[in-house]
Image (cartoon, rainbow, N blue to C red; front, side, top):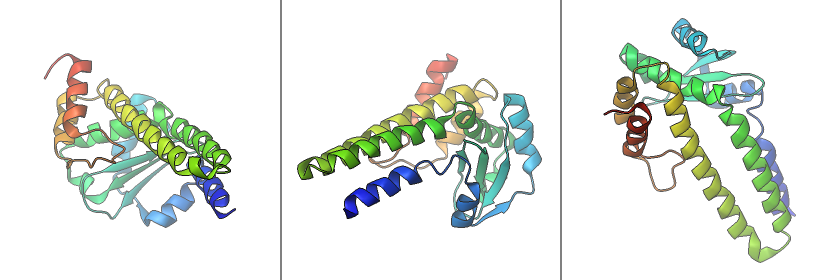
Amino acid sequence: MIVEFMTFAFALGSLLPLGTDSLVRIGMRLKPISQEERVRKMASIMGVKVDRVYLREGKGINAYSLGGLRNVLILERESMNLPDDQFRAMVAHELAHIKMKHTLKRSIVLAVGLSVVAALSLIDKLLLPSFLLVFLFDMEISKRMEKEADAEATRFVDPKALISLISKYGEVGPLSDHPSAEDRMRAIERVTGGP
């Protein structure tokens, strides 16, 4: 019974990005961003509506987007110090996730997958393999979405700026939901037809 409840909670939690940015804001300790206009300008160019832009006091260069009933963009503080072309590339990548409805699509896949896990949990020997299968499938979908967002971003920013930005990211682990920097840079070069 506990396993079924936890599975249901995970499935329900995967739907939270559909408009509950206040929970995210509180959980991640976010602040309003002083340079919001830079983000809104890129959003306007890409035709993406952004409801909220927040700054997170984390370490490293990174950004996150949540798209659903409200579109939220979250930037790490160090990202504000990027050269302008790389900052625009980072924002364009995250806006591409929103434009392509990646949060919604991934939430649906997770909800369906975890519902299947809940159903299969009635058969003890299938619980762990089915949960692992959903996890691996979600990681693969996420990796594809990262490359899709990169490709979409290159329609609006200099691909070299995006490649330069990606080269600053550290290596990903074997259980990461992001492709390696090298894999992403090669994919960008294939899409744009050049190094």
